[in-house]
Length: 110
Image (cartoon, rainbow, N blue to C red; front, side, top):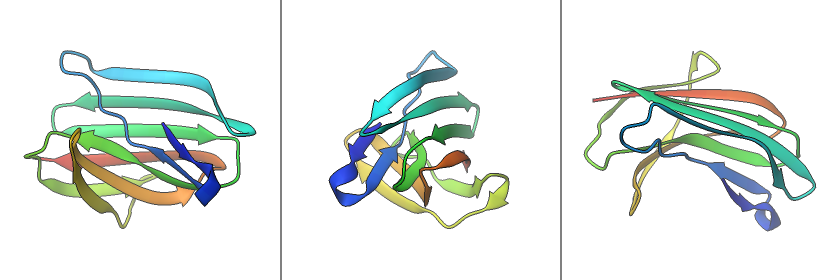
């Protein structure tokens, strides 16, 4: 969870640790609001769900291994435009949406 609220932005790009299938956090304080985050990784699928209670732009997705090739991305079950950026943590796949409400991003990769 990377708040950049001075710019009206919150990034949630979790990396599920090797040997685990899921991580989560609830009521994470962000500015004057909070978010719940749940992330899972099974096989070639990464899923991140964020429920936000604040006003901003949300970049939500997942951090994949560096060599992963993205094959499909959905937001709340529908195909979604996405951005891929490589970082020291791995290949980050993100979708832009609103911070208010629940957003589920599913990333398929090989």
